[in-house]
Length: 138
Image (cartoon, rainbow, N blue to C red; front, side):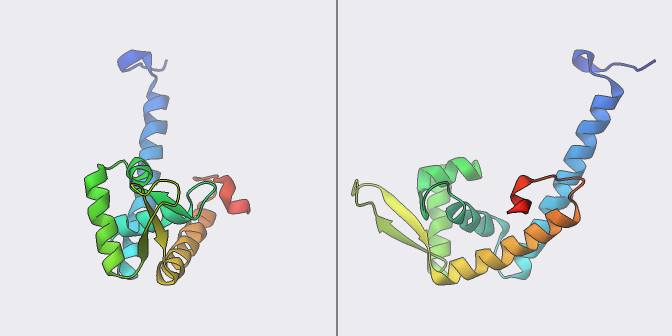
């Protein structure tokens, strides 16, 4: 008979949650190493990825990036500043509202995020049974 834990969950549910977190951490560790091997921090890579992958446009605002990174906006401003100093991103005032700042990738940032994203895609493809991500089909 299956023993239950908190909230009536079975041992099997705990095993599945544990396995999911384990596989997620393995992928995260891969990602951290890949970013560092290309001379950037994992957060710098994620910033570039979220700019490149922002739905419907080629830029993002700091608040949008903060949401995607699950970080405070002032911390994202510092991250953008560091990436701008390295030539990966460029800030531009919004044409719609001059108070808003758009964060765009530079050509250097585009090349870097493309290289790293390719490595990540290959890792996900190699682990398709663990991460059946639809984006791998495109």
